[in-house]
Structures are given as structure tokens and as C-alpha cells.
Length: 123
Image 1: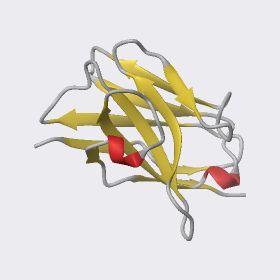
Image 2 (image 1 turned 135 degrees about the vertical axis):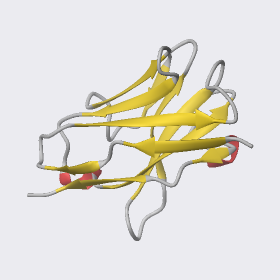
Image 3 (image 1 turned 90 degrees about the horizontal axis):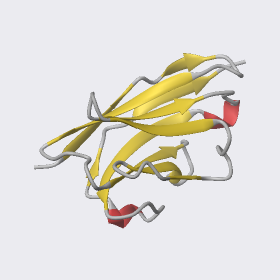
């Protein structure tokens, strides 16, 4: 059975940075797309970043472009999301989702979802 798990959330000030990590079990990320979604209470889940693990091509939402960076760590077999210049509106629960054939924001394309990791940005 396929599983993914997130780690690395935390509490930071505006302008701060965090690094989230997604780890797979029951499968490997090779040749698949891995995405990061986030959800704020009262709002729907939105896709923020996606990476093709082998090709390392990426897709970002307009709200995070230039501030978030998705990368694949072949040695650790993980997918990371570097969050920089964090804003209060970036706070929420961040989910890793995989595997998909291509990057997209269509949640139905992803068969495994993590439990989520919390990102809090306080003033």
C-alpha cells in the first residue's frame, strides 16, 4: 500500500523560512510527480507546488511563485519544499500528494496523501 508522510512544519515570523519533507513508503517517487497542497481552515485545499521527481520540472501557484522551491533529493529519496519569505497568508496545513503521471492541481490524480504538517506564521 502506498503512503506518504510530511515533516518539517513549524512556527515562524513573517519573512521566515521552513523546509518541508515528503517521504514515500510502499512505492518510490521515481518517474512520478509529487505535489504539495495546503489548506486553511474554512477554505478549500489548494495546490502550491509540484515537481516531476526524475525530470525535476516544477509547477507553482501564483501565490507562492518565487518564494517556494520544490526539489527532489535522490540520495534521501524525498521531495522537499523550501518555504521562504513566509507571509501570514501562507499559514495552514501542508499536504504531500503522490504519485501522479504529471504535475497538476487535480487532486484526483494523486493516490496517496499524507496527514499534513502545520505551518504557522505569526506577527
